[in-house]
Image (cartoon, rainbow, N blue to C red; front, top):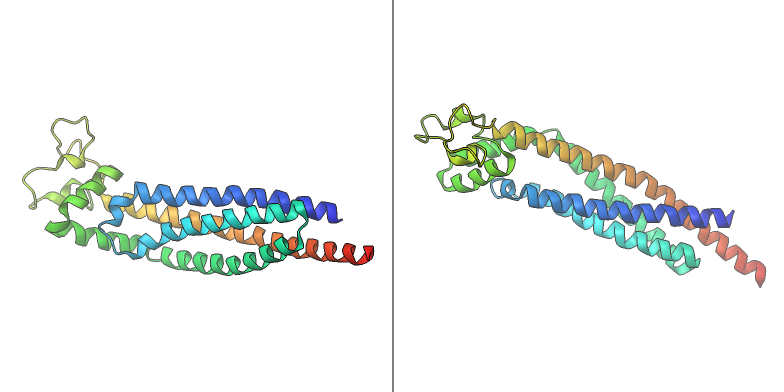
Amino acid sequence: MCFIVKYVLFIANVLFTLAGLTLIGVGTAVLVLAGDVLNVIPVVLHAIPISVIVLGALVFLISFFGCCGAIRENRCFLVTYSIIMLLLAAGKMYLAVVIFKAMDHIYENVVEWLTKAFLNESMREPFHAVEIAFRCCGTIGWQSYLGILPALPASCCAPDIQVCDQANAFGGCNDKVGDFFATYGEATASVIVVILAVELVAMIFGFCLCKNITNRKRETV
């Protein structure tokens, strides 16, 4: 039984290590891909990808710790691992709840922030950067620039277009950026919930292995 628990815990932590690296990659990708968007919206959205990166790093480090503890059957490692996993589980649960609650209004909030940025002349260049990154035009499409600019900016069309006009313009940024954050948020929260559920099982296995190790030591005394 101890042998089975040991290797189930080891394999689970190998998977958690990979999951941690995945979270780091996803969070970093969002910071890079959506960096221009984060320049024109409130700081609250900066916290989400940064939190995911930090969480991924913690999952990676603690899972690596758990792998070593399981293979070496080190009781101190396993107790420390299980306690930290319990604390991390609480943090993951809180982060998942925050993200799920934010999803209720994320699309509307992004649309509101983009509209304010679009109408603010001092934010015009950052907004054009958003258009380039998401291949979108204005808030609702080329119509957004009517009465604002004499011609559509180059950022509203593909780079190879010589003259950007209505026929070549991308769709509005509200839909593209809003959908991006909504999809990213839901996917991230779902992944966190899955990791949380499996980690709770791994934590229980960790305590079980600790108990088995302690019992074996008592039997040999």
